[in-house]
Image 1: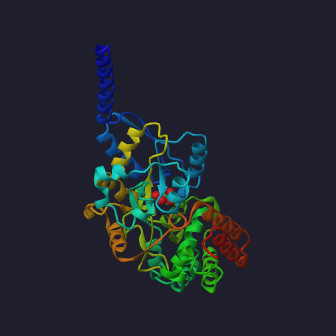
Image 2: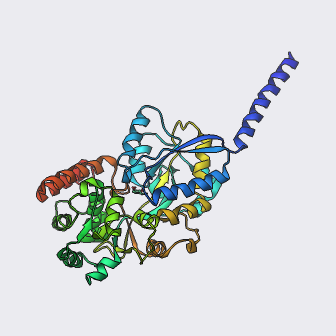
Image 3: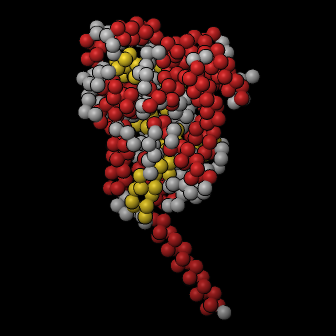
Length: 418
Ligand code: GAL
């Protein structure tokens, strides 16, 4: 009887030891990572990250399940369908802020990563300001791989030189510059499909209201029904009149291409456009120039791409290995200089980054930082989608008063405005 117990005990021990050994072994199998990085620059950045992962985890096969469509417009719909069918990928891209907390955390779809943070010492190297945006109840829910800037005015330096146009810093200067190039039959402002107009709108809100009132829009202290927003909508409407007529049919990178080709003078887009310009063979200040979006000097409107560990990830060990690379110095130094973003980590080697990205690093460190609407920081998905619906109507009918009323109603429905 005793002998039997001993044998049973040994058998249990053997199983336990085998389990420990398996955990210590490098991850293997397939790891399916879901993102929307398919355009020039962003896809190349992802490829560089994958390369670091392949080197560190030779037995792990990276399955790239990127779905095309900037800002995740298509990818997030596909992801939602997969999640409701109980078929999550091993990791997916989510924006730090309300997109993460208000959607995936609140639906219980992702796991806390506190242990991974501790094991990798990430709390010492990730920006303190970012951690609250990816945390709830003391748990940290994602691994930020970068910091992007939303409020950037990109321009074609040759076009500006040809027409003697100075880089505008205020909204009024922008309209004057636009008049000058339009007179020469060049499209002043390149724009793409609807999400890029939301992107434009958030920079115009910021440029018109300033950082404090802009923040107040998301905190319930600035009235969406007030005169500042009326003015912002007016500025936005005037800017829309300066865009290419085929905007709704173009992706963000096709709109950026108009600037490269000299068919448009400016575009307002996040700095993944920098990745696109470089993938197209251009260099900072030779092929493309940049400035803060009109009226937003001194303010950095940020967003951060981060990756999560789903509840029920098919290959949790593989996902953890991927997240470890995404949060690592080597991973971020390989990815960001190509992606057109700066590291989320604070210890990356600045000399690996070009002139534009070094300017972004300086601004991130010294500017007033506010969050992006289009890229998930300031409003949850429900609020954002109400804004999107109102915007779609405005783009179709140009009814500014109705747009403003719908924006005010969206804030009330979100429970932020009284
Ligand atoms: C943003 C994302 C960026 C970039 C961009 C265009 O939402 O944060 O990393 O991919 O969309 O696709």
